[in-house]
Image 1 (cartoon, rainbow, N blue to C red):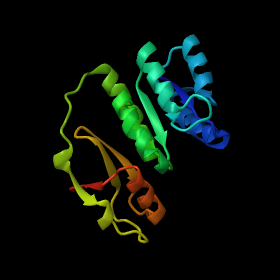
Image 2 (image 1 turned 120 degrees about the horizontal axis):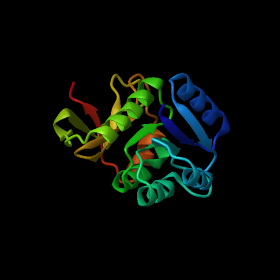
Image 3 (image 1 turned 180 degrees about the horizontal axis):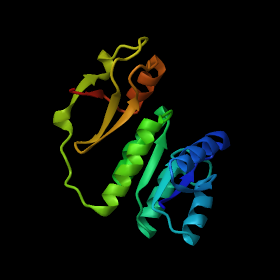
Image 4 (image 1 turned 90 degrees about the vertical axis):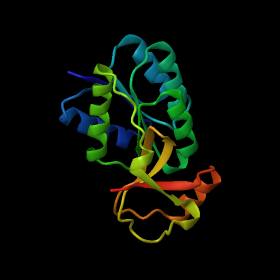
Length: 190
C-alpha cells in the first residue's frame, strides 16, 4: 500500500484531505508543519509527500529543498493563488506537481498517480508550449465565470492550473499575479 505524508497547518483541511486519501486506498501520516514533517521523514519511509507551501516555521519550499537533498521523493505542493512566485521557485527546486487551492478530487488523484508512474518509469519530457495558448494578463477579463481552466507556465515542460473551468478569477488575483511578474495566463488549445 502506498504511503503518503500529508503536511498541512490548517487542521480542518488536513483532516478532510487525510480522509479523502484514506478512502482512496492510501496509507496516510500527517504533520502540522514542516519541522514535524522532517522528523517523521527521518523515522518512516514514504512514497510521496503532499505539502502546503505557506506554513509557519519551515515552509513547504524549505521542506522540499530538504527532501531533495536527503531522500528524494516526489513532492506535490498545494498552493494558494498568492504563492505564484513560490510556485516557480518550487518548480526549479524539483517539486513534482502543484495543486492550486481549492482543488478537487479529480485534480488530486491524477497528480498522485502521476507521481507513482514517474517513480517507476522515466518518461521523456514533453514540450507543452504547443498545447497551450497565452492570454496577456492585461487582456484577461474578470467578473465572469471562465469557460476553461486557466494555467500558468513554469517551463515549456510544466504548466500548473490556477483556476478551474467555471470559476471567476477576481480582479485582486489578477493584480497580485501582475505584481509577481506574471505577464500571461494560459489555456489549453483544445
